[in-house]
Image (cartoon, rainbow, N blue to C red; front, side, top):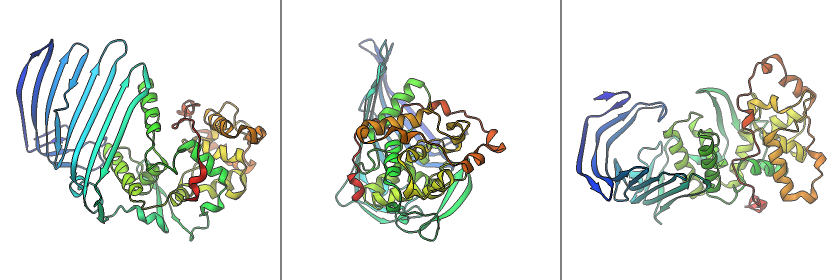
Length: 416
């Protein structure tokens, strides 16, 4: 049977218990699909095929209250998990969600990924809770435990270790490859990390991922902040991706935003960081050499030459702050500048990043360094007729709120 992108060979559902208990409707439901197929571009850009998907759902429902009991289970192919969910309405609604996956053979868990073979076992736990009035105080915990014998036996087409040497990077835009270049010594624009201004590294870390040198691929405080802002604004206004996650997505998975791609991104990031397949310094080096820094401008060397006619090692702190501030929306850089090509004083992201730097080193920074103007050649190119036709749909979102909370950043990790 096929219905609106959903197809299956067989579907079975059963209500084993239905009644009233303490003023609530109590139900025990179970069932699922065999030979399930899902064709929805929001979920995956390829057909999703699942041999079997079944579950048992024990729930209680009454006015302003819903609970999915922790006895509830879901099973997708060989992956089984207990789930819990709760909603309490009222003036201060509360939400809770939990998932626990008992220890499972790694090969069974990763069988749907575009990677090779694994041995060992994995265990996973997820917990989430939030109050309507206090979204920033939400509880968010996610942890996977591999067994001591967990081993990657073989990689398929997606192998993070290729970043340890020279490789070809492809930049995708709206599903199309628009730029392709070598990341390594054969590319004259490639700059080793030690030849890039430490201020640029510091500013990029402060803007994009302050705990990069210390986390294992995921920064939970960023996810919590993102959940809070997205909940308040009732839309997806902010992500919480770390530099590690951005690298996996951009180098291996393209830029299409689907649920399947996000799951692959998370799992590949976990593998890369957990197994130390690529050093932190190398990840930062690759990141600074491939990210987009303006229309058709990729990497720190091109950006430094274009905006300031300098080598990346020669940039001032103010220039580094400007470059780091435009990473979230590089194609909108024209609108961060005034009629003279200088950074606008009311530019939210630049001002927020400057304030974070001053909060950390206020006594040693001359604030005049933040009065930044790009080179006249760059300004003339940016304000050309083609650039004037651009619109600024998202510029108001470059507010003083960042993906990452203000905290002390330790640069000692760069020596690892």
